Length: 440
Image (cartoon, rainbow, N blue to C red):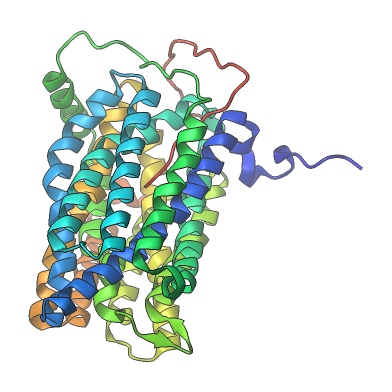
């Protein structure tokens, strides 16, 4: 009997690269821990609000976590892409992943000792956001160096599947382990999950920059901005996706204010809602894995933005648990599909010389601007209720999608080039070892 091979399954084309297989394995393990932390920190912040005697401030506290991430996220992200285009990307990932691991471990110890308060959570969120600001463009821009461009849509889909599959498994596992090990135990599991990605990074070869810049860091940043501004397609992809990320993206982070520690049929309602969002996102990721066979990515991008907004509105106004889970599923599907199409469109039109800087702007949307939306929606949630805040976010996202459909034919009619011309880069020697990075 012939052995199984990734070549038998085009959706798994990127697995033909041994380096990418290492990458994906570490990514999956690491992201399960990340989603367990999402659950744990949400519960912890709600508990802190209750302990402070201000349970109605839980949405605002969650919003302040967004502000804590935005403060370092915005300035760091603006220079992180230029750093990724100038420095060995593996070295960047070692530093960022180690920093985030120690931060998670510190939070775990504080939670075990009963010393975790809002200030500690905000400081941890600030440190992790600063680290992730540099991690994201390095991680995004390393993939085209280890995966041939024809397999790149498969790589994007598999990365998204790893993240969004973990968004189903992580909250469910966290919901089951919450009672026996508590918040501190869940945070410890996340800290340990970094070992998978750090171990994989030890076997990655150096990934030197494609070209050595001949000018300073600030000029590199400004050149990246001019490159995007000169390309209307890039500019509008970032604008429309950014609107969705800012106003619909924070929905998952605000779910603890909606669900708290409540149970439904003996299962944590928060873990079910997070998993429903994650299941929709995973479905979208599977579609993105097959996007190499689709060329009308612009149409899908806009339709996904509209779907994201419509179903977030419906989710916000429903009170039936099963219906809410269904709407959460479609909301997650729309948001991830929009992100996946936008990522593919950006990568297909960006020169590798500017790739790190363009992907840092893409990362700015959810590292710097999505937390700002989280703060705004959290404040609205404390004033008018979390359901009203989520509905408002859905309306803004829907409006952006409709505007793109009506007024932006450059996006609506955008098609994947039948043949991608990639600028030549210096050859990278790949020894008999693999590569991995992670999203945390």
